[in-house]
Image 1 (cartoon, rainbow, N blue to C red):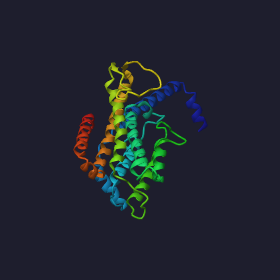
Image 2: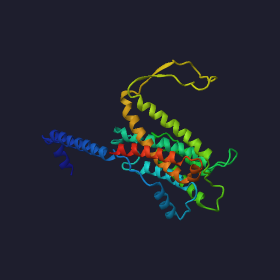
Image 3: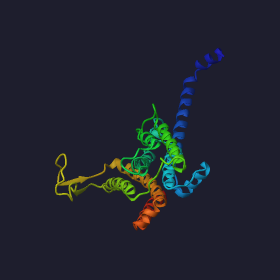
Image 4: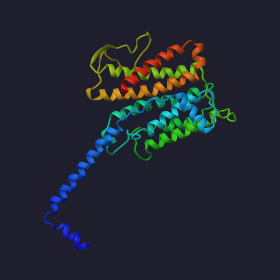
Length: 302
C-alpha cells in the first residue's frame, strides 16, 4: 500500500490528474447546488383548513370545538414552514440555502403572520377577560416562535419552532377535552377585532413598500385626524417613499408568504367566528377579502 501511494504521488502525471479530479469535483458540486436551488425554490400549495382540522381531530380522537380550526391551522402553518420541500432555509449557512433569497423572504412573510396569531391566541382568543390567567402552552408557543429567524444553532430556529408546534399541539389537546375547562378559545367580536387591527397594519406596511418600488412623494399624514397628536421629532411635510431596487423582489416574496399564511388564517376564522360574523353582518365582507387574497395567491403561483 505504501509503495502504491508513493508511486501515485511521484507519478509524473500526478499534478495534472489532481487538477482534473479537483476540477471535476468542483463542477459536480456547482451543478448539484444549482439543481438543489431549483428544487428548493418552491412555495407550498394551499390546503383546506377545515379538512386539515377534521383529519387532525380524527387522528388524535379530539373534539372539533370552537377555536379548533384556527388553532389547527396555525399548527399546520408552522409545520409547513418546517417540513416543506427543502425545509426551513432562512438560517442556512451552507449552499444551497445560503445562496437563496426568494424562499427565505417568503418564509419571513409566513413567520410574521404566525407570530401575530400566536400573540392573539395568547393575549385575546384564549382569555375571557383582562384579569384572566394566561394559558401555559400558548406562553411557550409565543416565546419559542419569537426566536431569531436566522439563528442556526444554540438553539437553531427549527428546534424552537418545532417546540412551539409541540406546545400548540398540547393546547389543542386541552382545548378539545371537557376535563380541562381552563383551556378555552373565546370567539368574541372584540378578540377578533384586536387581531384584525394588527393584520391591517401588517398589510398596510407591505402594501406601502410594494407601491414604493418607484420613488414617489407622499404628504406626511402621520398626525392626521387628531388635532392634539404629537410625535417625538419633527419630520418633513412631504416625504419621498422609495423601496431600494435590490429589495423590491424581497418585499414581493415576503408579501407572497404573508398573503399565503393570512389566507388560511382567515378561512379558519370564517369557521370559528361564523356566528359572530353573521350577527355583525360581516361574513360577506370577510368572504370578499378571502376571495381577493385567493386571487393574489393563485395568480402568483401561475
